[in-house]
Image (cartoon, rainbow, N blue to C red; front, side):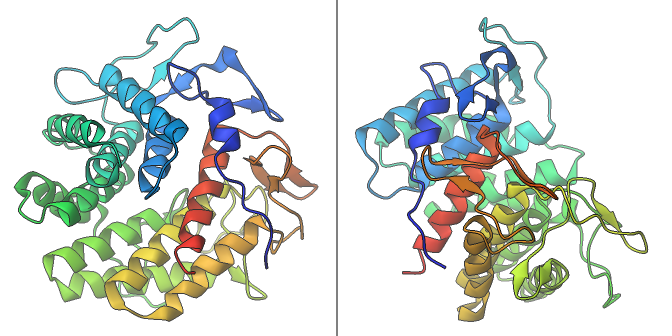
Length: 334
């Protein structure tokens, strides 16, 4: 399927000189909800991926990096929530937001077009890499940032150690062909778990680890495909043997699949993984369970979820970044 691409228009709309607002009512920013490290980190990932960013995108990268360095405590952990009054409402911690901050910083350190952004992002990444989270997803996100650093600097022992620990935290999938997954329940951003196993296996030369990640990703793609379209696990999650809800599907699930399939294609050279990227892009363009466009062409914003009545028309940061990220992966195919 083809359609105009969203670009970064709505991401710019959601951003100011402090950071990136979390929520919107349709396309209008909801300032009362403030900012969060989770979304700023996601934003830093997608703007850092651009090979030839405009001045405006470089300014976004600078803003997002400044936010993250302000959020980081002396231990390397991160605060997550900043109110519109510019006051933190939590203490530094090691939840998902730490992992995503490490992902954003690692991507910026490896890929940003601005040299000083690369340098400062690496300083913050190294400080954050002193920590480890007890949460598998937080570790998976951090591992993806470590993989970015390791691709740019194969001699980085800090990144290599974090990536190894991330893969160990995720664990290996079960041998059960009906549920070859390291967790008993699918929740959110599931493909990130498979992706970190894939990149850890590839970059360390561990074929068994790589094969485990590929096997779990292939299964995940299969159970989330219906009629040659992605039909991703709903926000309520899914445990083996339980009924599976069809809605509300979240854009972050689709974006995670696109990222993981891109990692699998890179690691193996197998172009069949590109089918997953195409399905992810097509999901946003209307090839989904509601046959509806999942972004607003007039604003460039991604809709917040796919419900049984159609899209949730709010266009928050997470869904908009998921849209941008997926389209970046799709554009890499051409």
